[in-house]
Every structure is written in structure tokens, then in C-alpha cells.
Length: 222
Image 1 (cartoon, one colour):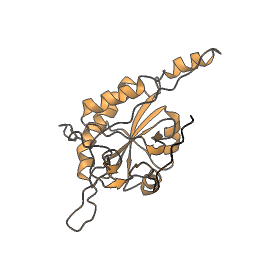
Image 2 (cartoon, helix red, strand yellow; image 1 turned 180 degrees about the horizontal axis):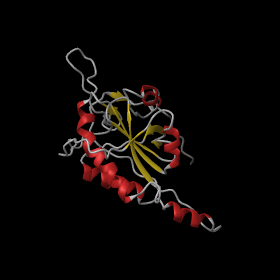
Image 3 (cartoon, helix red, strand yellow; image 1 turned 120 degrees about the vertical axis):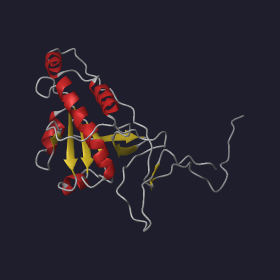
């Protein structure tokens, strides 16, 4: 019997002592190498908001879409993502002002400072980009609950394009309040398909059909 393990097995890198190296974490089949931006990390002061354990829940429930970069400063891949993430956060903040628009916010969490918060969100590698919808990042996949994450390219253009796709089906706060006053209004929730990308961590599960030891009799009505 042939089993397709590409959808349920995850991989991560290890060193010569068989210890995890803390490299980037992905899920799903390896389709292409993740592209990072060429931006230089300059201290411009235009970084995205840093969330802490005391304000994480407030922000995650305040915005219909909250996208969080869980990172570690010592991680090479976290540092590769940082300039693109900060630039994307600045662009999204300018296009979708948190005060006037209020549909999306990009943020980050330093897991070396907020260990409890990262453990609570089951962060297993860095960087991990999680998508929260009104406080929750859980989604159902073939009867199994998983964390909604972004596994695509990490250059600024790709990040911004993805964020705009997340915002597209959500009405602005002013539009939503106007629609709420109409009794006939029926709000439909648009479900975003799960992203696909490469991976390097070994963990997961295998789906197999139930096997019967004895043959099942077939009864025909004549």
C-alpha cells in the first residue's frame, strides 16, 4: 500500500549531535525554496509593534486579522526576515491605518523575552508567522485542528501581497458598523485556503484506511 506522507510530515534541521539547530519551521510538501528579501536591516525606527504577554490578547481580539512574527534574535532566519517584515508592516500600516481602517495589523513577538507567550502559542521554530482571526489562529484541516500560518516567500512584496489578500474579504470598520444597522444583512465568512510551502522538520501523522483482517461478506438481495 502506497502512503502519501508529504502532506502530514514535517521536517527540521539537526546538527552533528542530532540536536535541533533552531532553523526555520515549515509545513507541507517542499515546493520551492523560500525567497527572502534583499533589504538591509537599518535601524530606521519604523518597526512593527512588539507584543508582550500583557497585551497580546487585547491586540489579537481587536483586529479581524493579526499577523505575528514569532522570532528569536539569535536565529539566522529570523534576522533574514526582520527587514522585510518591518518594511511590510510599515506599508500595511500606511495602507490600512489601524485607527481609520482597523482590519489588519502586523506585529512581532521576541520569544527570548516572551517565552511563556510563545509556548502558549505552540511555537516550535523560528521564525513562525501566525495568522490570528479575532483572537484565534486555529483552523480545521481534514478533521484536525492546526495553527494557521504563513509559509510563503519572505520578501517584502510577497508579504504585502499576502496581507492584502487576507484583508480583501473584510469590510472596513465604518462599513461594518453601517451594515450592522441593516436587519437583512447576512455576513458571510470567507475561508482562506491553507498555504503550502516547503519544510524541514520531522513530525506529523499518517492517514491510512482502516484494514480488516477478515473479508467482509457481501449480501445481495435477489
